[in-house]
Amino acid sequence: MRQYTIAGEIIQISGEGLETLPGFDCFASHNVSDLESPGNILLTISGLRTDAETPLIPGRDIPSGFTLTSKDESKSYRFFAKDNGYLFLIKRTDGYCLSAEINRRGNAFQSSIRWNDDFGAESLTYICWIMFGVAILSRQTVPFHASAVMYKNKTVLFLGESGTGKSTHTRLWLKHIPDTELLNDDCPFVRVEPDAGIQAYGSPWSGKTPCYKNKHTPVAAFVRLSQAPCNRIRRLTGIDAIGALLPSCPLTFTSDKQLSESIYAILSKVLQQTPVYYLECLPDTAAAQSVFETLNRDKIL
Image (cartoon, rainbow, N blue to C red; front, side):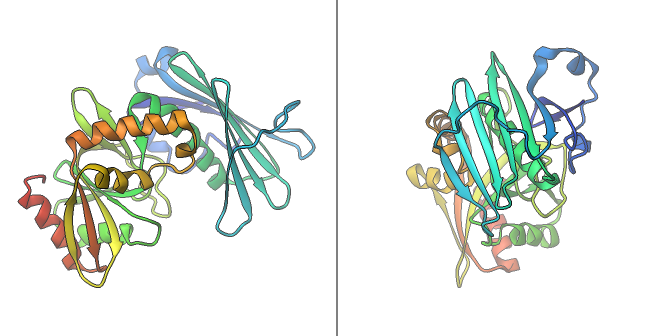
C-alpha cells in the first residue's frame, strides 16, 4: 500500500500492478501526520487482477451509459452513474475487460479496480486518473488536457485539441524565453484555493512527455491554441472564455449531470480570477513571443 499527495490531496493505492505505476514516485507522501490520519485521505484505490473467467462485476447487469471508442478501435470505454458513485469499464476487442467503481463515503471516496488478462501500466494509470479526477472535483479541483509552463512562479496553461501544437508551443517557451520550466505536458490540475487564488499543480499524468513534478504555482492565464497561417492573439470574455476552457476538461465527466455541474461551478470561480486568451498561430518562435509579450503588456506575468 502506498500513499501520494497529488494536487494537494492524499490518495492511497494498493494492489498488483498499481503500486509501481510510472510517474507516481515523486508524489509519495512523507508527512507522518497525513499518513496516520485516515480522515486526511481523499481517495483509496484497491486493485485486483483476476482470471479471464471471473466476472468483473458479479451478479450485476451492466446499464447503458456514455461510450467512447479508442482511435484505433481496439478498446471501448463506458461510463455509468450509479447510486452514490460511478462505474467505468474498458473492454478490448479480444474480450478482456477492466472495471473500476468509485463510491463516496462522507467526504472521502473508495475505488476498486478489477481486470482480467494483462492490462498494462498505461491502462491502469489512465483508470487511476479517472478515479482521482472524479474524487477531486469535490475539492474544487479539475484536471485539464493542457501543456503547462511555469515562468517566475506563475503558470500559463496552453489548451487545444490533440495535434494543435500545445507541446510544441511550450517547447518554444522553454527554448526562447528565460526562466521557464515545464510543469506538466498533458494533465495539470487547476485548483480553487480559498486563500491562494487559482493554482496549477503538476501530476503523475503527463502524456508522452515524462514530466512528473510535485510543484504548484498560481495560474497566470489560459491560452487556447489553433493552427493558422499567421500569429494573432486576443483576450476572451464571457461565454467565449467558458467555451475555450470546457473542451479541455474530461469529456467523460461532462456526460454526467452532477460531474458537469461541479466542473461548471469550478470554471466559474476560475474565470472570475484568471484571464483566457485565444491564439491563432504558426509553430514558430514569434508565436511564443507574441503570447509572452501580451501577458507582460497586460501585467499578468
